[in-house]
Picture 1 (cartoon, rainbow over the protein chains, first blue to last red):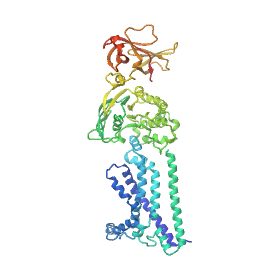
Picture 2 (picture 1 turned 45 degrees about the horizontal axis):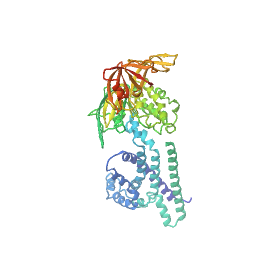
Picture 3 (picture 1 turned 90 degrees about the vertical axis):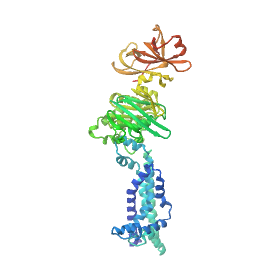
Length: 227
Length: 355
C-alpha cells in the first residue's frame, strides 16, 4: 500500500469535513439564498458583500480572526466553554465552523442565482393555483433551481476539500484529528516524500475534475430540457 | 350577484383608481390602450398586487377591505397570464393537476376531464411544456386555471402573444367555455375584435381609471365614447336563428328590430347568435327602397348624430329599440335632414355572424 494509515485517516477526515460542511451550508444557505434572491430590502447589498468576502480575503486572515474568536478567550470559544465544552481552536468542530464560513459564497451564490433566474411568474402562477408560500417554495422554486443546488453542493464540497490556510490556522495539524489531505500533502513535500505527495495530489486532482464534470454534464442536460 | 371593485394603487408615474361594479356572470372585457392599468387592475383583483388598497367583493364574499386581505392562494379564482407560464419541470398532466390537487374535494366542480375536453388537449398530457406549440401551451394554461373550479376566471390578454392563426385556433375554445361553464370571466384585451366576439360587458379604461362601463352592445354604440367614433365603429346585435331557406341557401335571424338574412349557417333554429354590423356598411334612406339588392333593411328612428370628422357623421339608430350605427357623410345627413326622432330605414350592406 502506497498510502500510509495517516494518509487514509487524513482522507477520511477531509471527506467528513467536506460532507458535513456542505450539508450545513445547504441547510443554512437555502433559506438565506432564497431571501437574498427575493428580498427588495435596500441594504441587501451589504449582506451580499459580506458573504462574498471569503472569495477575496486571504484564507490566513480569515483563519487568524477565527483562531482568536474560537480560542479560550474568544466569543465562540467562551460560549462553547460555558456550555460545558472546550475551546474550539484545534478541534474538528472548529474546522467545521471555519469551513462553513470559508465556503459560504460558493454555496450561496449559485443558489441565489438559480432562485433569481426563476423569476416571479412561476410563483405567481402557483399562488393562483392555491399553493401557499411554503408550498410554492418546495413545489416550484426548489425543483426549478435544481441545477443551482447541484452546483452549490459540488462547489461547496470541492472548495472545502481544497482549503489550506484556514485549516492550518485554526486546526493546527493534529494527525487523526484535524489533519486534512491538503496539509498531509504539504507535510509529505516538506519531508521530501514525493511519491506519497504525488498519489494524494493526483487523487485530489482527479476527484475535483470528476465533480466538475458531473456539474457541467448535468447542467447541460438540464439546460436542454429547459429550452 | 356582482363583483364590486374599489381599489387604488400608487406607483411612480402611475396611479390606479377604480370604482366599479361588474356582473358576476358572462365575460367582462377590460379594454383600453397599453399602460392604462388593465393588467394591474386584474392583478390587484387576484391579490398579486399587495399594495393595492380598497375593497373587493366577489359574489358577496369579501376578498379584501380596509382591515383584511385574502392572499392570492386563498382567493377562489383562476388566472391565465399573457404567456402560458407552464411549469417547465412538470408534464402537461401534472401541470393540470397542480391546482386541482390543492383544492378540497368538496370544492371540485369542474372535473379534469371536462377541462381537458373543453380545451381539446387530450393528446398532449404526457408531453413536456417545451414540446408544445404556443397555442397548445396557452390551451393547457387555460385548462389548468379551469381545473381549480374558479368562482372567477381572470384572463390577461391570453391571445396577445400568439399569431393570427393560433388566435383563430383558441377563440372557439374560449367561446365554448363561455357557453358551457357558468363561470364569470374578466378578460383583459386591447383587441376590438376579441372584445366583439367574446365580451358581454365592457369596461373602458384610460390612465389608470375607468371611463365607462356597461353591456357591450350599449357601449359599442354610445356615441359619447371613442369606440363609436372610430373608423371601425360597429354594433353588436343579439339575434336568434328563426328559419333556413334551402332554395337560396340562406338563414333568417330575428331580432327585436326585424329579421336579418345571412348566408346559410348550419345552426338549429332557436340558437342565440351575435351579429356584427359595421357602421361604414350601414346606409340610411328616408323611404323603404324598392328594387335594391340589399336584403337587410329595417325601419329605425334616429337617436343621435355626432360629427366624427370634417366630412363624416356617425348616426345612432334604434331599430326596435336595438342600437345600430351608421357612418355617412355630413352632406348626406344634411340632405336627408336627419334629426333625432326622425323615422328612417337602415340598410346593412353586410353582416357578420360572430358565433
